[in-house]
Image 1: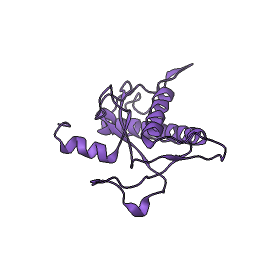
Image 2: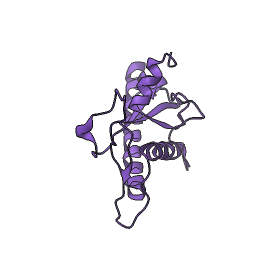
Image 3: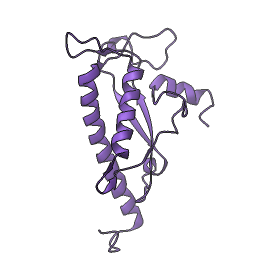
Length: 168
């Protein structure tokens, strides 16, 4: 409303739109993480692979694995407009497996599968059309593996991608 009335500078409008997008994404991530964890279990940090430079360390094996959403493009620069899509990259802390929440469940899976599925759910929910249109159009094409690769990559893979010079 302040933008429509000319009460704010464009920079303030960009900041406000960025803050709104961040709050919406945080809620979607929280909701979808809870739902997927119920289904597949809690993702945990696995053993340190040989030659790993970016693994959190042996003292963290078995701890919950964190999920990271990086905003690129206009949102990443905190300059979105009313029609900007959200360029997002999904990362997870380290390789590993999920730990089932239910004893009789055999639904354990790899962290790459869990977090790629989580990324798909986030995109679907943000892109979902409702009575007033969709919340956001999410564009995940800026991920290191491109369209054909996994939707989420480990921090180690992300760093390796940029160190190799492919990310320039």
